[in-house]
Amino acid sequence: MKSIEVKGTARTIAEHSSEQSRALKALRKNNCVPCVLYGAGDNVHFTVTNDEVRNLIYTPHIYIVDLVIDGKKVKAILKDIQFHPVKDTILHIDFFQIDELKPIIMEVPVQLEGLAEGVKAGGKLTLQMRKLKVKALYNVIPEKLTVNVAHLGLGKTVKVGELSYEGLTLLNAKEAVVCAVQLTRAARGLAAAGK
Image (cartoon, rainbow, N blue to C red):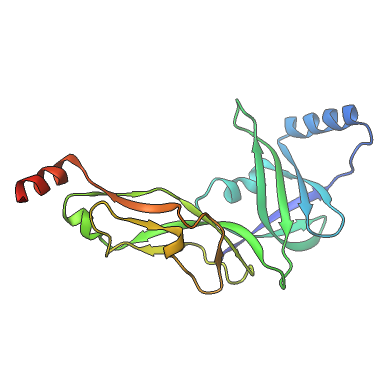
């Protein structure tokens, strides 16, 4: 998995919530995003600029984050992002510090591979789950999970329970459909004509 460096500045938390919200508003006005790093014992509150996290957030890829907070470097993953409901600006980001000996939970993009039999017969291949939730040590997690669909016939699906990857535990429901070859009108017509 690729890594990306993000530099931040530690911040102190105001004791009163009214002061806290004023401080956060001022931060956001100055193109900064309040962040919290969990998993490191005490939670670390810090800020980053919007430019600093743009390449981490607006991408289909997943990254290990080399967080540099006031010169101190830690490895982390992006855990959660809160967006403004109207403006779509970033309100808050949660990071989780990686422990090399403990497994982490992360969503990994799914990539389909091969030409499905059902597509050759006129069906349409649809990807129903763009990401799968996995649990593993961070250095085992791949950049993407490849699903081979060459064997997939008309009207057939690939479910989470049918997939397995070395060193990874899939946490999605076993019956959840990852991808399917759906019958199109043309395929139904061909099937009817062939009878």
